[in-house]
Image (cartoon, rainbow, N blue to C red):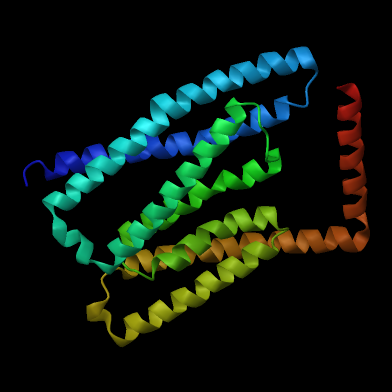
Length: 251
């Protein structure tokens, strides 16, 4: 067991580099897809450059990191097989499986773009880019809270920040509201049996995050409703569409 902490450190290092690759590769996909709309000469130069960048990132950093992180994780289970008995670890392994599926699908998109096959829009890739982020939040909350259920409201609180920006604030209100409801249920459990609850500090932190997400979401909803009621929202949309048309004409 003297090597356990060294193996754990190596596992964490390669998990970090794995996620770094998964965070950045969709951005390169977006640039690649958008470069396809450029004039022919500029298009060829940009796409060739993005192909080289994605190939290096994916094959030199992301794939090796994924293999090594998985290999060291298996080694940790061999050294400490009792880990699998924890409920939170079983939930974490489900998210690891989802992460592997996400990685495989990203590899399929990578192969398509390398062959000049574009099946997805840049907007889709922007949403796809958030997949690894959500998985990372879930895994971190699972590890810190060490609970098979308490991680849910922590992740929802974090995602509410994304939801408030992508859904005019309404999505953030729903997600942070659910997070607060679940946090209150855990608080009730703690009051009834504090001796059996070892992660109450993390629960309070997650609750604070959910409250912040709710406040920001409500502010954005209020601004959205104000702009809609005064007609300014339609004006902003018209200005945006005019700007897009001007950009297309310039191209």
